Image 1 (cartoon, rainbow, N blue to C red):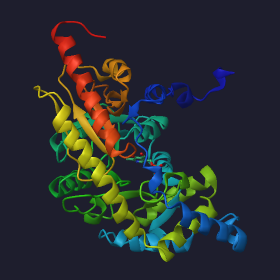
Image 2 (image 1 turned 135 degrees about the horizontal axis):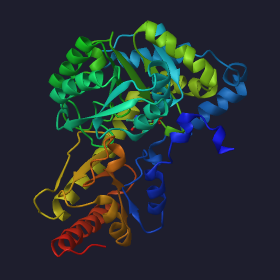
Image 3 (image 1 turned 60 degrees about the vertical axis):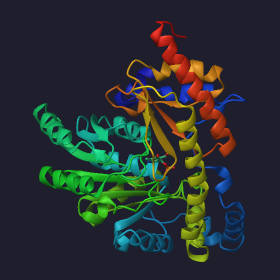
Image 4 (image 1 turned 120 degrees about the vertical axis):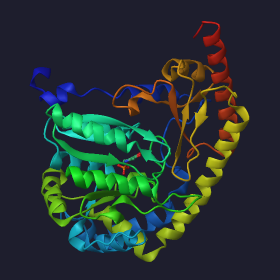
Amino acid sequence: MSSLFARRASKARRSVLRELLKLTEQPEIISFAGGLPDPDTFPRKILAELAADEILNNYKKSLQYTTTEGKRPLRAALIDWFSQDGLHYEMDQVIITSASQQGLDLVAKTFIDPGDAVFVSLPTYLGAIQAFRALEAQLVGIPLLEDGMDLDHLEGAIARARKEGHRPKLIYVVPDFQNPSGITWSLEKRKGLLEIASREGLLVVEDMPYRKLRFSGEPVPPVAALDEERVIVLFTFSKVLAAGLRLGALAGPKELVEKVVTMKQATDLCTSALIQRIAARFMLEHDLSAHVRKLCEHYRLKRDAMLQALERYMPKAEGISWTRPEGGLFLWVRLPEQVDTERMLKRALEHKVAYVIGTPFFVDGSGKNTLRLCFSEATREEIEEGIRRLGKVVEEELAGLSTGQSL
Ligand SMILES: Cc1ncc(COP(=O)(O)O)c(C=O)c1O
C-alpha cells in the first residue's frame, strides 16, 4: 500500500532527532535535550477552575464549534497583548490557531508552491523546516551571526535562487531568543531584513514564541512593528501559559490573513472553542503579564545557573564557545571543528547527560560541531551537575581526538 503515498509523504522522513531523544529519556540521565517549558510553571489550579466552569456552566458555547477565525474575546485580548509591543492590529488581522506549529503549516500551505525558495537561518527551528519541507519548499540556509542573519549572504542567496529557477517567497525568522541558538536580532538587522524583503517583494514570517520570556537587557521591537504590511506574526501560548493547550495566533495584513483562514477551514474547521474560552478568561480575569514576569524570574535563575556552570566546567580550549541568551529556553554551544556532537552523544549518555545535536537545525547539513542545551526543565542542582558531566565529556572527546582515538 505504500505505493499509494503522495510524493511529499514518500519524501518525508522520521526525524533523527526524535530517535535520539528517545535515547536520552533513561532514568539517571540529566537531560538538556528536551526543549519543553517547565510543567511546574503551568497555572494548573486556575486552568482547572476555568475549564470546569466553562464545561458546566457555559457548555453551549465552550463545547460547540466556533468560527475558523476564532473567538472574538480572545482575539480582542490578543490585540491588546500585541499592542504592548507596538503591534497595532484590527480584529480581522488576527486569527486563532492550534499553536504556532499550525501557524507554520498554514503559512506553508498558503504561500508555498513546490520549488519556491524559503530562506531560513543556519541554524533554525526544526518544526519550521518540517512544515516548509512538507510543502516541497526549496530551503535556503543563511548563516546566523551574533546579532541576526548575515544579510549580505541573504541578498546573494535570493539572487542565486532566482537564477536557479526557484521563486523566492518568504524569509522565516525567530528574532527573539531563537530556538535553537538563543540569539536575538539587533534593531539594525531587523530593519535591514525588511529593506531586503521589501526590495525583493518577499514575505517575512516572524515566529515569536519566546519574545515575552526576556530576563535581561532591553526589548527590541518586533520586525512586524517596523513594517506591518510585509510581516506575518506567529504567537503561541505554549511558552507563556501551557503547551498542552495547543493554542496560538497568526496576525498580519488583512488580505493575507483572509486566505490563511480559508486554508485553515480545510485543516480543522476551528481551534477548540473550550481552550479558546479558557485562555480568553485567563487573559481577562487573571494577569497574564504578571504570570509571565514570574516565569521570567524562574527561567532567569536556571539560565544563570547554566551559564555559571559552563564557565566553571567547560574546558578552556580554543574553538569552544556558547551563546549568552537574554531570554528564552535555550543556549547554543560550538565546539572545535573536529568534534562531531552526534558521535560524542554516546559518550555523553555514558556520563548520564544529554543534549540535542546541532545538525538537524541546519538545512545544509552543517553544524556537526554544535549542540543545543535547554535550561528550562532541570533543577538548578541538576544543571550544575549535568554541565559538570558535559564538561568532562568534552574534555575526554578532545583528548581522544588529539590521540587519534574516539568512542
Ligand atoms: C521557534 C518555534 N516555533 C514554533 C514552535 C511550536 O510551538 P507550538 O506549536 O507549541 O506553539 C516552537 C516550539 O518549540 C518553537 O521553538
